[in-house]
Image (cartoon, rainbow over all chains, first blue to last red; front, side, top):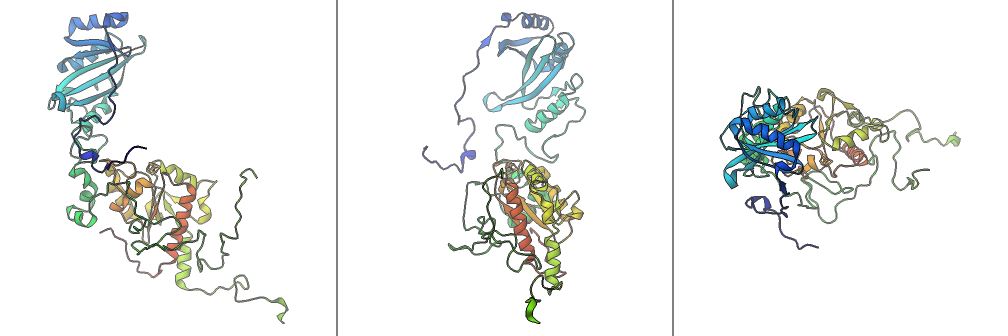
Length: 268
Length: 169
Ligand code: SF4
């Protein structure tokens, strides 16, 4: 067995230390190795500036300037028949290079090919919405704003989608603590009871591995249930697992565990 | 005339039962616990299974209602997110007193495995809880046992008009 290490402040340690094995990169190939992609790229290069292009896992990856994003996606849709936007989102590289990477994952049904369009934007840079081209971008762009704080211009309804409207912070940024900042940790208390209630309700208990057999404030052992807050010592009372306690419901016969039969054969 | 040997004072001797108001009221309350349908995540599936024919909650008088106004017990089955916390409080406030809350499963008890920014770390941070059921998810038997324990708890209460309202703060 592994030696035990206390894990209670794992989340507080800085990010960007590799806690897990980091997989090596998948090999990249030249776009010329695929006929269809080579043709698409040539058509694209005539109109737009392409920063980088390669094939990875049988998909073409194209890096473009963020200002071109609407026109490039439009070109892919209308000229190159990539007729489906399966996914779009952002990747947080703020700590490494101060930028977000935005990607659009496109699918062509009749070419049976997938293309990924990528670009880097600065932290406060807004991008153009592609919702007019693909309806699926509507919620994806809202989610991107919700999780990363990437603003999208000309979107019909630029609001948070998963988190509450009055949420503060962008949870999928690497700098966001997994267990939430102060706002997140007190969110429900502040909202329902007000800030004054913080002292009464107390901070969240985050140590899920904590087990206290004699903690009857919140829990009691099965078959040894006690009222909330009762003082429990070693000899905690045993509750017989019966439908009714002694003197429970009048007129109804009490079932006793000893007088019941356990049927072992379920197919009886 | 002693040949019948009927003990008139015992159950079934005569259709007469001597009891107290407390007991009658609590008998009614504990045996018609109408539960608010509150499946929030995977535990909700087990809650539904408890209601369905194999485990059959109806024989305990527990019938699921879709309205907080008609229910006595709220079975919080699943993960309570921070976004939803205000609504659980609102639904709890809409239930008529006396009301009880069963927190079903690790998520509702402590936040469970979702040790994250978006999950309320235990519904007892928002509403007062009467009974915590362990498990992920608790089997329907556990939920039935929990309801039976809640019935016992209700029968141990005084049934006077003035129920002390349960408040978190
Ligand atoms: S306790 Fe387990 S089964 Fe229940 S809601 Fe949480 S994760 Fe799902």
